[in-house]
Amino acid sequence: MEDEKFYELIDVYRNPPNKGKLEDFDVSEEGYSSTCSDRFTVYIKFDGNKIKKSSFDGVGCVISTISASRLCDALVGKTAEEAQSMTIEDIKKLIGVDQISISRTKCATIALETVKNALSKDHMKA
Image (cartoon, rainbow, N blue to C red):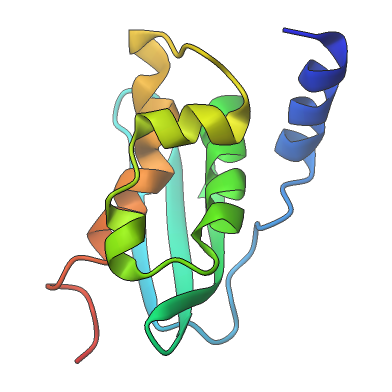
């Protein structure tokens, strides 16, 4: 990894742009990884059927924190269906890596899985 990219990612980890509870949200969900103790809550606000704003709060490793913050940016403008169709390949693009080791896959996807749970029909407000 290039030094510049490395320092950019470390800065996102130390100062995640989308960290903090949204004051006004439509959907929230907590996600937890028993393998590494990462724990995040995601908050999503809609404008019609599109995601207007998204944030997260909690604690996690470098990979999970960067993934959560970048995912929050990527969700804006998507419908719930578009967000639910996102994959690990999308996460890799968001954090700028080609590969994620098997042992770190859960770290990279905990925020995405939490978003998908939040957007499931069982959790969405009527």
